[in-house]
Image (cartoon, rainbow, N blue to C red; front, side, top):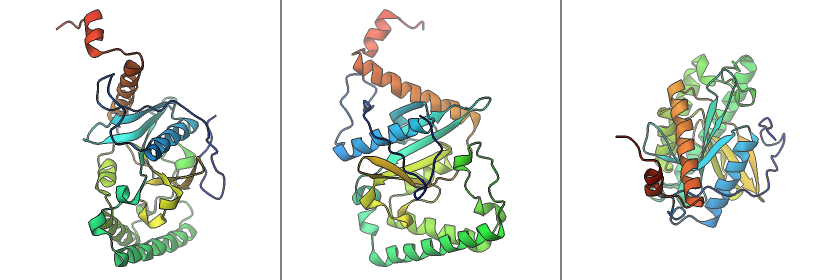
Length: 268
C-alpha cells in the first residue's frame, strides 16, 4: 500500500475509501466529537489519516496533544524505520479562509507583495539548482522527502527573501502556530491539508508541505522540508499517538477511567 511521495504533475494519490475517523475531544471515553467540527474539516482529517498510512506512517491518530507545546494536531503519524527512530509527521487541516487568515490583517496590497516574493523565490531556487546540483544531501533518511537545502549554501539574498516571506505571512495569516511547531521540533514533517479552492502557493507556510483535496483525493502540491528532531522527542510523539488511540478505543468500548482503575487498581 505504501508508495513514494510524488509531487503534482507526476502522480496523484487516489486515496479513496472510508475509515472510521478518530474524533477525540477530552480524555473521557464518553466525550463527544470535537465541538463545532464541520463535515468538511472531518473529511479533510479522514483523508489525511488515510494518506499518512499510505505513505508508511503505520501509527496514526487524530486530535493528538503534542509534546513540548500546548498545541494539538488534527492528525499525527509515526513511520517506523529499521535501526532508526523513524519519522514523524503532523497534519493541520484548514477548511476556510477565515480559518487560515487573520481577517483584520488581510489586505490586497500585502497579498500582492507576497505573490511577488513567492515568484522571486521560485526563480532564485531554479537558478540555485543549476549552480548547486548537489544540494540534495540525503540526510532525511527518506529520499522522497529529500528536498534541496538552499539555506545550507549561505546565500544572503535567499535568506533575506525567506525572512521577508515569513514576516509577511505572519502578518497576513495565523501562522504563529505553524512557526512554533517547527521551532519546537514537534515533528520531522509538516503538512497543511486544504480544499483545492483555498490553495495558493504563497499562502503555504515556509517549510510546510501542501496536500490539496479535490473530489475526495489528496494531491501533494508542495513537498515539506525535513526538520530534525531528537530521539527522545520521537518517542514522546509516538507515546502521544498511543494515548490518543487508547482514548478512542476506550470510548468505542465504553470503558471509563473509573472502571479501568476499579478492575486494575494502581499501587500508590
